[in-house]
Structures are given as structure tokens and as C-alpha cells.
Length: 193
Image (cartoon, rainbow, N blue to C red; front, side):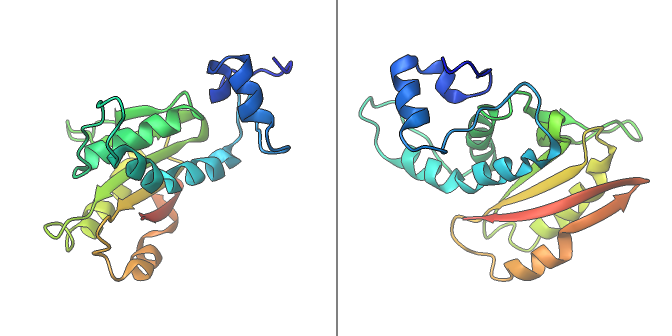
């Protein structure tokens, strides 16, 4: 209604009254997303990922409608919540996209956003995998460059009980520019919450 292409703006689905309220209540708070977006859009993705705890908190409350009956004790649930959040700003996002086969096998990447060449891998920390999740991420880091969209890899570590005490050293160990199988990419590790 403002003459902009609002194809990817969540407010475009709200009707004119709610759109007006949502997009113009605070000047400068609206951002119209066009059909194309540049690689620097990862900052928006990082902001969305940082809001996962707020979404989980909201969905953990009893719903007035009685529809919420979610359990947040699995990696898949957290991934699905993140996917629903991400899809509004990145409509090309895909769930469980396979890497290219090597020796007859491929790995599924949790989330892929092709237009910004970004992969997202989730790890859910429990006492049972506290001592193995870093090794699992290292395997993912060397496996995922086989994916055609691997320009940036976000390793999102969901640690709801704050079991990981050495977050800084894990980030220092895993994050940064990488080259594997003649492909350069960047790894970023996010601990949430």
C-alpha cells in the first residue's frame, strides 16, 4: 500500500490497517525487503536467530486457544521454530537439504538459504552430548562445503540449561574463515540462549 514491493514483508499479509500500525508506528523501524537481497543480509538472519529464546518462551506459555502443546526438548523442534521465523524474511529457506553425495552418501543440512549462500546447523545440548557436540560440529564443518550453497555456515548451539561452560574457546576453535575441498567459506558459532 506504500508503493513498495512488499513481497517478503510479513506486514503485507496483515491487511492495510494492521500493516499501517505495524510498519509506521515508529518511524524508521520498517524495512521493505525486495525480491533480491545481497549477501550482507546475514545480519538480519543473525538477529532472527538471536530471537529464538523469546519465541520459545512465548510458545511455552499456555495458549488461550489451547493449541500450544509443544515440547522444546528436541533439536528438531528448535529447528522448526527457527525455520518458521526465518522463512518470513528469507522465503527461499529450505529444511533438510542434502549435500552432494560422496562415496554414495550425503548429509542433510538443517536449513539452507540459497540466495545468501548460507547453511545453518543446529545442536541441542544435553548432558548426554555435552562432550561430543564439538566433534559433531567439526564433522559438519568438513562435510558441508560439498553443498553448492556453502558460503557461510552458522552453527547454532541451543543450550537451554547453560551446560556449556567454555563457549568462548569453542567459538575460537570453530569459527572463522575455512577452506575445505578447495572451497572457501566462513563458520560462525552462535550459542543460544
